[in-house]
Length: 97
Image (cartoon, rainbow, N blue to C red):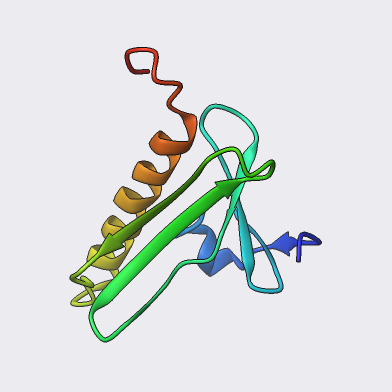
């Protein structure tokens, strides 16, 4: 699952620097390294999650509304959720970044 290939050019817009392998996406972290996740959704909700490679940190962001009215709305929602995941996985609890 961790043997990956770069996500398509189209998905790079949603998952910048992302790599995909058998159900898992590896994405870079702003603090260095990366995380593994598999998001999804159904009938109006979305989940975005991630875990560090060593399993030391993990997070799930669940949204009860999927903004599917336009490409820009979907992209904005994905980016905000991705920023939350990044912040949770990178934050050391030392008073912020």
